[in-house]
Image 1 (cartoon, helix red, strand yellow):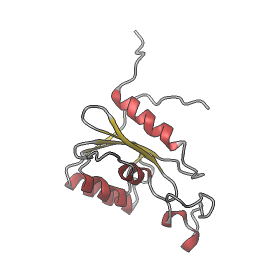
Image 2 (image 1 turned 180 degrees about the vertical axis):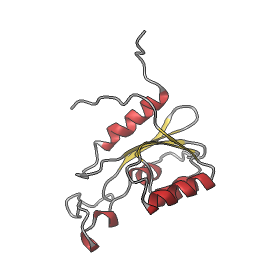
Image 3 (image 1 turned 90 degrees about the vertical axis):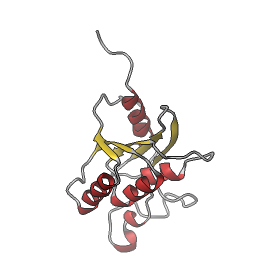
Image 4 (image 1 turned 30 degrees about the horizontal axis):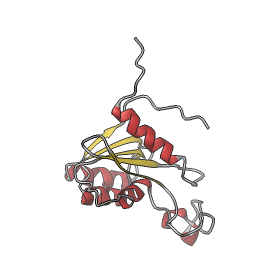
Length: 156
């Protein structure tokens, strides 16, 4: 018998993947979805420039100095945390994200009380920032796990 429905993990990672398509970043599109214990979506986000700044006014390249996107881009996890509305708390929530969080996003995840991170890819796992992120998340008791499931095929 073929499984026709998707799991909660597949559903929420699918939302994160769809959100990533909103990113204007030409090399790394990242999406995030925050969910509470009742399987309700609390917030979503994707990586992009700060609100109110035209996407073409700042660099998208990996250049140096002021020409580096890394000085300007808000990460998907950070945007999802900031996009939380209506007084919703993130305490005890799960974060689904297409790329393992950096050390700066790990701090925000910990500070807001998110208790689980489910990630899709970890292409920067050997970097100091990602190792620091994992160390902080582990020390804070945040459950971290790699997404295991079917990825939806999104056609456009």
